[in-house]
Amino acid sequence: MKHTDIKDILEKDDFIGKEVTVCGWVRTARDSKNVAFLELNDGSSLGHLQIVIDKAKLTDVDPEATKLGASLKVIGSVVKNERNNTNEVDAAQIIVLGKCPGDYPLQKKFQKLETLREMPHIRVRTNTFNAVFRVRSIMAAAIHRFFQERGFVYINTPLITGSDAEGAGEMFQVTTIGFSKEYETEEEYYANDFFGKKTNLSVSGQLEGEIAAMGLGKIYTFGPSFRAENSNTQRHVAEFWHIEPEIAFCELPDLIEIAEDMIKYVVKDYMEKCPEELKFFEQRFEKGLTEKLLSVVNNDFAVVDYTDAIDILKKADVKFEFPVEWGCDLQSEHERYITEVVYKKPVFLINYPKDIKSFYMKQNPDGKTVAATDLLVPGVGEIIGGSEREADYDKLVKAMKDKGMGLDDYSAYLDLRKYGSVPHSGFGLGFERIIMYCTGMANIRDVILYPRTVGSIK
Image (cartoon, rainbow, N blue to C red; front, top):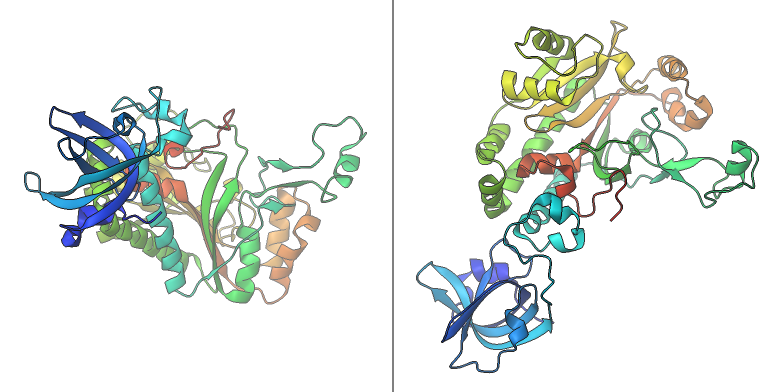
């Protein structure tokens, strides 16, 4: 039906004195002897539009129109409320589009995020999630625009794969057979399955992205990834969204520059396009959020060698839950100490021990480390993991054998190192994690529409 977005009416005085049609859900309702007020929200803005009902003029308002959660179509004239300098609508006609009974779950003004997670189909109507998902949309558009403006080609990599990009398991199996006692061996089971071999949901589009970059030069992917980690932390979900550029003729310093530019571009765009949402998140979820984001936009990120970071952590006057030694995989508490206490800004950690990183990362001349980098940010920890890729065929084969990987499953990937191999690099950015960083939302379950976690498939 034809109607005007509430956002436009709130922001543009061009509508004053004109008749408009608006649609939305009732957020609040107040009644008095001569006049009633409704606040309507249609999802286009964080702000609500006040609907004024003059009972002397409008005598036949359906009682259902004043119930929280009801959806309405309102026709009326836009006027300026001089008391608070906002635009509102004097209603001439109110039509109830959808009634809402008294058991509507959002009767309370404030509810815990944990409670709202139990009703993902309803929580988007709250101010918090209304803001989160609008910000998510703006940031997704900014990511696409960043890469498109720089000549990257957008590639859709497969979600069903016969390989494990990480070389570390923890994948969701794809099968059309399911539980069966018909087959005596695993080989027989997979031979009779849809693809004739074991297949999984992809943990990453990186390997296919590298293949595309070897012909297109600069590519990026932006889509879902799936990881069957039995983890219940605030930073992990089983299905998440992933941005993965792969760039030919690119070494680690070049990759770090691109990653920093991208983060600053996306954060700046969010701050410019979502000032009301940013203000809301700062008031409700993270004091100092604006200052933190301005620091990201206006300052260079630190670049710190893994070995130097270990020395810093070992000398720290802090008792960490997890001991620190060279060769260990840093925990969230270590990452946050580096970013929040030592450098007080985002940090690229580089040159990790090869034994704790993936097989495809370029081996450094020291024989102990790889040209890898993680971007660590205050409050969240790692949001980017990347590396220069190993371009030497023999070194890559040895790394794969050392990890017990089957070379036949990666024959196409290995061919890239045989036919015109070039230095190339890439990284993965967890989309939900950068949203967390920009909004102050502490739990990844609160920045994705339907969070998929262990034991939960609501």
